[in-house]
Picture 1 (tube, rainbow, N blue to C red):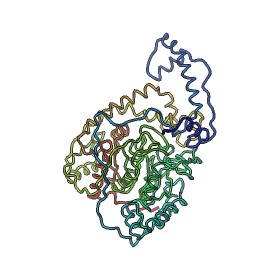
Picture 2 (cartoon, rainbow, N blue to C red):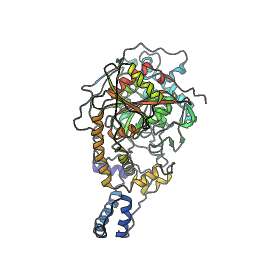
Picture 3 (cartoon, rainbow, N blue to C red):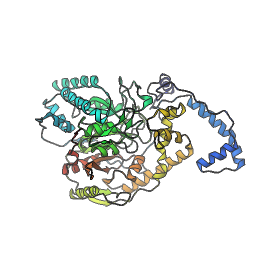
Picture 4 (cartoon, one colour):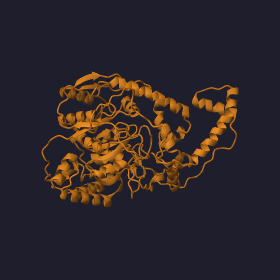
Length: 554
């Protein structure tokens, strides 16, 4: 992230913002010579055959490469050092969906303080902001209210890693003082929030949900956290994530679904989704690489925004996949997603993957008349009743529906890009055998994925990214001319758009037979967050799925 070599080595030596959570144990490669027999065995892994003469000619080069690997591993590169290859998701001929920046919230009546203050638990950001702005409640009161709820329900839901209570009360008091003095910053001022514990905050542990890192403390504030605090928001807790951003199981147990605590919350943005759904926070920041906002938001009935790749800075965030990681809000409504996204989006000189793009959102839109909305059927071609009802509602709201061809199957062959980058980001775990300390040790768990990634040829990783260029261009051509499209939350579209970098908002659109929420995703053009947020708000105002909440009878 634009860090000089000298600074990188200094950081590494101090283990500051490094994955090295304990003493690094040097593991040297075998000193035995590389032989033709070894090459013959390696051929079976990579699926390429060489003649005996060709294999023999390769031995010197292979030995030199092995020495280079040993030298590279001596650098003990911190997790925050990005590859020199910077991913750009913009296709050839791309036209930005928005021409100018504009952010307009709808005009509404001022929210009233409820007779039963427990109802504040499920108020939206806009409603809470009205109460704070009109001095019907203070930020300190609201902060204490949500801290109490977090502490009340955490024993059953396990969504908090660490409270930032001292910091929160200080920030809340500052917000109240500023408002009293007539310095109102906007709708986020005084609003409590939490962050997934892969975002660093000075003075507090950043555990990444992992046993090897449970005592890790990083002396940096994540850019997203700084932006929210600059807007006046109040950080009250660091929330759980499945270990190293996978699933809902972390070193403290399993984060649970407030609709049914016998089920996990899904992940890896487990704590943010569970806490917001339980009315323990108005909003939280999650992350997604391959479903980590979409999946827990679905399971817990939240509204979550996965922005376009490059929209929000990842400085201060754990890296899992440098070309697929994205940070976004998990909230109660599309309007709340828009509010938080407006605060966190934008470029960052410390994160060279951020991309400057206009963001235009008008919350006063009430109709979809004139909109062209595409739709993709489920992979098994069986229509979901709730998804069909969503299509009917969008048509009723004025949209023209356009059938959309499914993505090319090439995405199945390149998703190992994520595994390769994750294997690089956490190679030290494998080298020092700390992968054995991770909670999940099955074939599909990170330890095995990290180990397997060490045998992925660099050439094949490059080839996969070349194929990704084709996928990005092909998908752009397919959806060009649409205002947006909708897709089942769990379909090939989820993989495709995490590879292409397109944004989505996931929102509840019904309930299954067990009474748990189900969802749909509104998908946008690259950097087309404004359109999908507007459409989702219009849809939610015409339905009530996002206004239903778990009873919390436990």
